[in-house]
Image 1 (cartoon, each protein chain N blue to C red):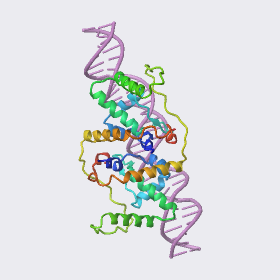
Image 2: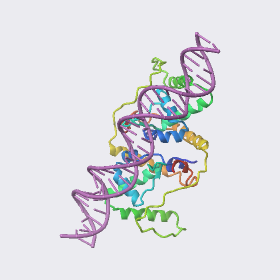
Image 3: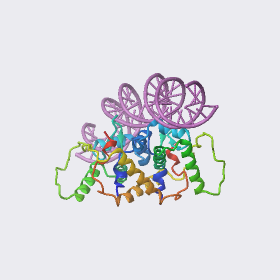
Image 4: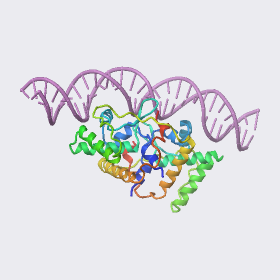
Length: 142
Length: 142
DNA sequence: ATTACATGTTATGTTTTATCACATCATTTT
DNA sequence: AAAATGATGTGATAAAACATAACATGTAAT
């Protein structure tokens, strides 16, 4: 249950996302400008990306590297979304208008959230000890 | 394989960690000062926490709430570490000296890393769609 | 040749985080 | 009780990270 939490939760500042994806800040912001990703924002207006967002950016990068331009990527994502929910027609949003940012209600208390997170972390910890040599991610620190 | 990557990779700035754990920056830094967590640092000296670090902090918080003081938590962690590796005796580090920061070599190229990450994300995506209502994490954005 | 696309670069302002010093309040110790 | 210690809050100050915007540039489409 609820590993969804890990994928949709806004967690990463753009600097980390740059490293994780190999994209420049300019690129990431440009893709957002064209509605290909919609990271959340902090109160201070900083972008916060989720795992889903990173997933998306990696896909974009793949497609870019295969020569697809932004219009093409837009179509691909659009048709995919359409395939997932073939009920709601909705206008196809051909404009350059970025997707409206998600602003929703909070359903979990802070405590419930942390309890959930704690559980997730514990569970995750059970099966991935000592799989890789310590320090593989050294590039991400100094 | 290698979900280790997700747990040990330095990803989160202190602001996010504050929200995820409900601890104040002061507390987090204080715990680090006493060697209970050892977040990585960016080139610019900002702390970067991994999932493991957050896990650790949530444990610390639990113990604090149960009335355990820092010395106690130190012991608990120490004895746990000892239980995991009952070969290396090593002096018990009773001092207040923070644990030496991890500085290691990089074994994966940037590309390999991202490929790995991409794979992980894809795999993770397979089983956790639509488990929770969209927007449960709204508290983390504005 | 012009235009549009995608990205780099630079300038400038704001937010976030760092360290440090001092304050506070509860517990121990003397 | 007084003093010391432990754990955290608060404020000052500096630097890092990030925001937006404008302009530059190389490549592709018209």
